[in-house]
Length: 131
Image (tube, rainbow, N blue to C red):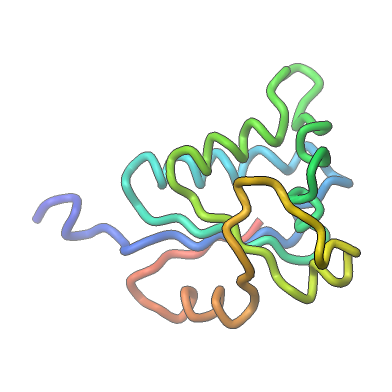
């Protein structure tokens, strides 16, 4: 059997504990997203809770996961999006964070929350990661 015969249909990533208050946690989910997308796997990233703040203009651009790395969190996000990862934001989280109606970064794909993520989690052809 080939690698493709054993591959998942896609990867859904939930960002829950990943938010601007802990920038050291922000690069890893996007590394994984970029890697999976570069392997031609569909990748969906679901921003929930405070992680939706990363979709607001200027927030991710001002953050670095390490003072030793000059690359911004936004650059990591753009790498993932450039390989094809799609970014979804929970409507309730956007409202809770005061971002409902705000124009978000260009990498933002659209709304997607608990039901959409759970549909992926229950689909045996998809893999899920939670950060």
